[in-house]
Image 1 (cartoon, rainbow over the protein chains, first blue to last red):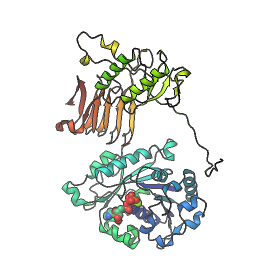
Image 2 (image 1 turned 90 degrees about the vertical axis):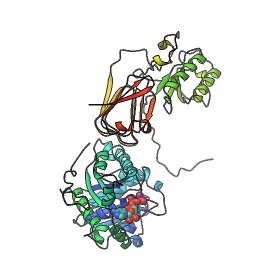
Image 3 (image 1 turned 135 degrees about the horizontal axis):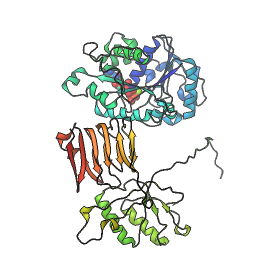
Image 4 (image 1 turned 90 degrees about the horizontal axis):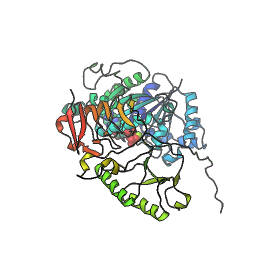
Length: 271
Length: 249
Ligand SMILES: Nc1ncnc2c1ncn2[C@@H]1O[C@H](COP(=O)(O)OP(=O)(O)OP(=O)(O)O)[C@@H](O)[C@H]1O
Ligand SMILES: [Mg+2]
């Protein structure tokens, strides 16, 4: 059964696109057919992070408007044959996305893929609500600082109200992905602690990705960080997170600390 | 001229009912407005941004007087969304629309405050404008329980009584209760108890980190709160015009 994941945050620049690409590649490496879908119409980015910007012919808006068929718009990754990209349009705006069009494309993707990962634009407007609309699972990308946490909280509220699942009286499965975590600044008290973020958001933690230059290096290479250097600290964090999303139990670690220390935090659940 | 439809999707029209406050002015209108001002001074911002319906069924009023009344209310930031019980001849274009078929909701009454009573004044209960929807019926104490966190951007509005949240109230979320507010978690957002005029309402929380607290219109922002209450289990209540607080346990 196809699973739809939305990678969302409310706040901009927290690492959604980076996470979409990294998780997409990690899930595809499990030999499960995966597509990453760029919902950031007008500010597309995912094609760059995936290194596919020069292969974009048709995009999501073309498919929605009937100018192209879905298979024409899908771009197969050069490194992983189970990984695909459905790019966004750079020249349109978010109003080109219609609820009916998105529904149709999602329905078609579900027939062909195991994982459909939607990279949400920032904000809480149309683009973001359409990206989350069909989600079974939400990965809420949060940086350990107050404004990001508050925006994530807002997004969680929308996931409980504006998604198809919510309207059916079901729940979207929610996972907190803490990114750009800086151990040194956390110890100095410049950043919110993992515990505090979990207490405020009260959803289960799926991973902690450290702040690392490896992320920038990978995006300059045009490769998801999990493919660029699979031994790097952010790649390891994303690989573990992907296994958890796929249902495996993997002990949680705070980057920079001894393994297993955070075991008690993982699996903590509320609401 | 004919317009070409480029988008042929049909427009969805849905019905929905909302809870509005109903104001029933009594003659003489000047005196009634004075009493309204008095109420507003005690519950600052009470009407702000709330839907208010003007009930003129029992009022002998002509169109000019009605317009003036709406203007006067507008000056007080009371925006009238509709007029109930008015004869068709009272209306003219530009006025709030006529409303029909309103169903009574539980009473919302603003009791007069002893503190504003001057010696020799008539019994306050008789002079305060009341936001009555119906002749008082035996009142069942009502309350709601919310079993999950209240997220940023969400508001829980329950003028009928108490609100209990089993979970936290996020920064940027708000609870507006006619009665008391109970939060079995961290209160980070706003809590407004006694919001329709109930000075005996209280706020209880397991951990106080609130942005704003109000009881019966008396406000306290995060900055005015004693630092030693932060992070504590606290209850708050009203004494006269001040919000009092003490640690629980
Ligand atoms: N773990 C990390 N360490 C260092 N830099 C990071 C990390 N994660 C993301 N970044 C950088 O942060 C910037 C924003 O990341 P990204 O584009 O993934 O965020 P976004 O949430 O998709 O942004 P937008 O809201 O604009 O779509 C990028 O320059 C990216 O390289
Ligand atoms: Mg992005």
